[in-house]
Length: 565
Ligand code: ZN
Ligand code: ZN
Image 1 (tube, helix red, strand yellow):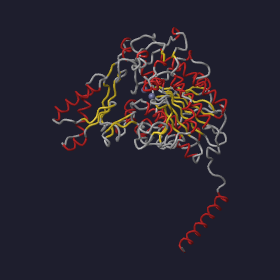
Image 2: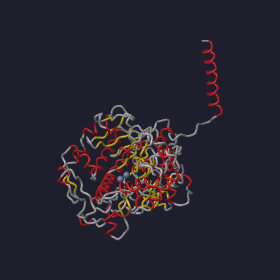
Image 3: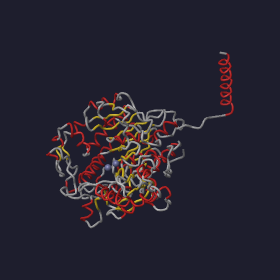
Image 4: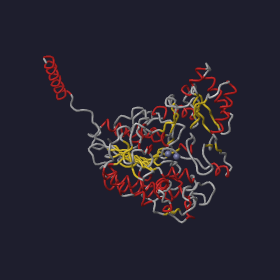
């Protein structure tokens, strides 16, 4: 008892001491962004899944004045924004934008990877310790969290800088398009459940769905959109930037429903009445973006974003551009029409933001998570080298080669996403040299058609940072999650089918992505020097005068501002 009294007395003296010091010798604390009365009220991050930088000019004459053109004509366009790692996919892209660093540090080396620890595939935002919220509990679509992310996000930093007074909300049709931008501390991260057509979350974020999300789901917007017929916005002969409607490079919309099993307009979406497929089909049409736009407007209204004492962050990721691009290819009228319709959806969001929060209180950035290649047969038909890489056959041949060379079976644990994972335990047991086997694998792969590089884990960490692709392979490599040998294919080579296209390479078609800053005090203009996807988060941190995310390796872009801060 006496000790307690004694301790309390000392504590009281210390407290009085601190109060005195504070009031007498420290005139003010460092200005938080809450005290920064000219800080933007709301940061809006818009990610367009699979948008290449050249789409801005390719579709320029088809865009309205109020969408993409409004951002370019009134904002600051970084013309040479590149992804600076090799796995240009959705998970790594969203992680890089919001963490300001590469897969080597944020850990999102791919959409999914092989885990030696679990001896299983790991999907970047899966978390089976979590429960779905907003859908039936057995549905795994909600069992997600940022648990696999190894460094924090700009939204997390905003929370730390404002003593958690900021509100951070992230939305997308894709779970990874929302979970990674939302970071560890979001106030709400929501994605689309393609089983029930609703927006859902996980119990990592909240135990019951936010009332406004329930209200939005009750509107059944997805069902209404699936009653539409997808018609081109313009006369079909006006799509002069695309190939004709009926070409063999395009996949069909939905192979489960006979009437939609085609690749030409019109698409009668109401023919897909099966609950099992219709909510999935919606994603592969421009109306998937319209659904997200409606959800974004509801989020802005009910979460009162931009109306708080501290700066808020709203992360929106439009995914239908990616689904349409994969399915129909990047030269299709379907893709062009998806951008014409998205332009109107973006215009509507900008109208709402400017009318309700004011351009001077908003800082918007628009970018993409990756681009995409031309369809392989489209390239070949135009005499541009391209090819399909068959990893299954390559794996079989490699296994046979290793068995013959080293006299041991099962030296390969997994061959996935162009990463070869060797059976290190077996190699140890058999007292073989890991370095020797890695080198043998790389030498074998280098002789396979379509392979540009095969780099071994022993040499990647000691690469000299002078050559672009070496630097990018190094930025991709994470010792705990990457394979023992990393393959880079030749330009225009991919693991894909005959129709449509994909992404995931270090080449310009996949890595050159748009970047526009707009609103607040941003001066209209263009910036020509190369910047990287990892520079976006530190630029936002710099403009807000807060710490960049903890693993950030990017550098702030010198975005010119009106007046002084
Ligand atoms: Zn993507
Ligand atoms: Zn994709």
